[in-house]
Length: 128
Image (tube, rainbow, N blue to C red; front, side, top):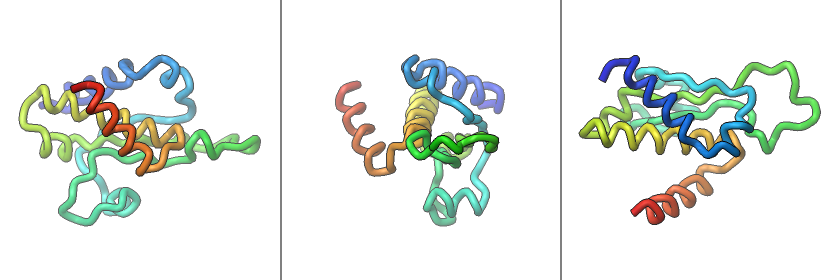
């Protein structure tokens, strides 16, 4: 899949988020990179050789106080090569991009990794 096609999938996944979340996404940039840097792997808690599909870096909305001003945007990075490594078909890539975007946006809204995983299990049951 070309980089442009993949970036379009990420943009579509953002557009498909519920409006109540999209409208509240503030000061956050969503970018696509081919693979994580060593620093991003460390932040994501994965060792070399493990896959990191996405990464949220920033101050979650729940932690922002009255002095949250003049700061660089938070960053959500979606890693193309990692997603392509776990998805065998174009349809699986589309679904994995949607899941990864949803996962990282949940972190932007202050959900812990444990809480996000619990919500993901509920979503899978609901979608089945």
